[in-house]
Each structure stands twice: as C-alpha cells, then as structure tokens.
Image (tube, rainbow, N blue to C red):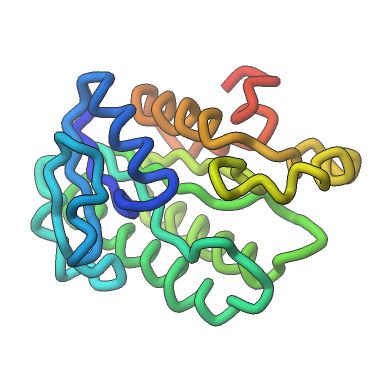
Length: 207
C-alpha cells in the first residue's frame, strides 16, 4: 500500500484527497503551512513547513514512495500571473527536488488542460513544471483538469457547454471526479510518465 507525501494538504482538494487515501488504508504524510495543521485530514502525519523551500521538509519525505503535489494559487485568474511562477511553479520545483532526493518512486502532479484560449501565464507555469517532472526521470502521473467544480466553485457551470464545444479537454470536472482520479493514480503507478486528460478524469474514456 503506497505511503503518500501530500503537499497542499490543507487545501480544497488536499483535505479531501488526504481523507480518501486514509480511508483506503494508505499512510499519509501531509505538508501544510505553519498554522494550518488542524486543516489536514484527521489521521494524517502532519508536517508544518514551507512548500516553496524543499530544505524545510526534504527529510520528511524519506520513506514515502508516492509524492502528490497540490500546492497552487487559489481561484486562478489572469491578474495572478506573477503568483503562478512564484508559488505554483516554485513549489512544484521544490517538490520535484525533495521527491527526487528521497528516491520517491511515483510523482503525481495536477497540471491544467492545454493549450487553451485563456490563462496563458497559468498554463505556462504548469507546462514548465511538467517539463521539470519529465527531466527528473521519475515515473509520474500528470492530471490535466480545466476547472474543478466544488463548494464555492460553481460559477463556471454556465460556461461548461461553451468550453466543451471548444474542446472536450476543456470540460469541467467535479472535485469528486478529481479525488477518484488522483486516488486511482496513486494506486496504479505507471512505468514512465502518464498524462490523464479531462475525458479520463470524467470517466468518459479508460484511464
């Protein structure tokens, strides 16, 4: 059973994924920022550290065989272009470094569907992170949702049919679908780099 190191463990998807993995019998070590310890899933081993600084948590990755990276700017918008590089990309590079140093056997990363007509800076940061994952040589799963629906995240529903006409990869996914796809990725590591697009996350095509 995989021993999972989970970043962004106090966030929108992190709390849910931590709880799901624990419920499936996995051991979870949850990285949160200091002060957010109580927001991690109950039963997880909590690590309070800086996700932008691999040195602050590198030694706590030891012993884990799977690394799931979920750190990112909440509610992305074009106005947050600098944050996409300073937080999303910087934290991904720190995570890749820590995972590689610890000999983690499977790296799981939530990227974004691309190409797409908007959010160029966000996509650019995520693509650069994907390139860094490939360069690390580690087996990895990259999931590419477009927008994840959940509590407080329902406004794009009206845009769903329009986005889907542009491309199936821009269809909306629910947080439940993302948690199922992430859990499945953890439990079925690939030999190389696997990319899971929106139709697979939605269960419309086999993973």
